[in-house]
Amino acid sequence: MTRDNPYQDRAQSYAEAGVHVGDADSAKERIQQALKSTLDTRTLGVGSFGSLFRLQGYDDPVLVSSCDGVGTKLKLASLLGQNRTVGHDIVNHCINDILCCGAMPLFFMDYIAMARLNTAQIADIVDGLAEACRESQVALIGGETAEMPGFYVQGTYDLVGFIVGVVERRNIIDGTHIAPGDILLGLPSSGLHTNGYSLVRKVFDIDQNPSALKRRYSELGRTLGDSLLEPHRPYHRVLGPYLHLVKGLAHITGGGFTGNVPRILPPGMAARIDTSSWSVPAIFRLIGTTGAIAQDEMYRVFNMGVGMVIVASQDEAAQLAHAIPDAYTIGSIIHQDAGERVVLI
Image 1 (cartoon, rainbow, N blue to C red):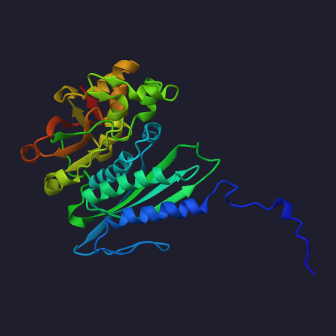
Image 2: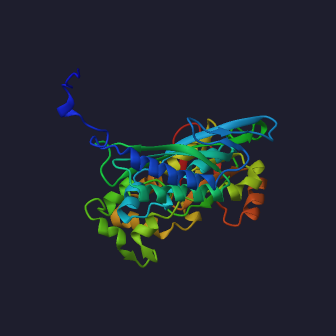
Image 3: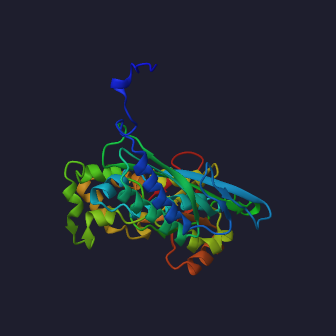
């Protein structure tokens, strides 16, 4: 005798709820192919419920980790159908963050979430991640791909990165030896990197008029969209050989100069930055002019053409400027017990 199922007429599936397991499996296969190209003998296992990485060759290693997202730059990438560059953005952003402690990257993991898994879109994102990892000799050892119907707007997605690097304990950079008279050097950014895009979308009314991204500006030499999607620049390859000359590093991300430089300054000190010491790239001048944005606000939101600030003694700053052709003096450390920690002149 069989018992009638009182719920038979209401039986539903995961797919009907908006989650498509078959699509997820297809996407994961493509991801596995991409990440294999980033692995080496240090990677003992990828997959299962965790990934294994072997740490070797250090005397007193300290692991340095960081987590960040690309932010609303993702919306522009999605609108333009150019999703490969954001993979570079998140890898390079995370590398720069741990570099500020003197660490070099070991491995990277990602999190991608969207309303409905789009295999082609995911493939472009992961290919970008893998390219960036290969260029920086970082192992892409895993991550998570989530389909979340009813949570994300169809066509948009989120991308988050997690990185682990290593530094010998004796070589940690923490800013404790920074002193008045030390020199500030700047390294050029490649554009906005991954910050300020909510303001940019408002300035150019991109949410209401996405076609603004395809407008070509003579001062940019390309379209607005191409300029805004320029990938975040990494600095570890150029700075790596010279980290022993560095007292402090500030990655100029969200919060601009006023939000990031103070993070590395000891009490009683401030950074005096001469904003006339470098040429602000055209993309920032266009944003500021179009949006009628005050200069102070521009330097509080954007990197303004300086992606990394280096603090070094006068002698070591001279060595760095000689060894790194695109490093230039932008200011100095001053004694200041009260008031602003960053003085822009």
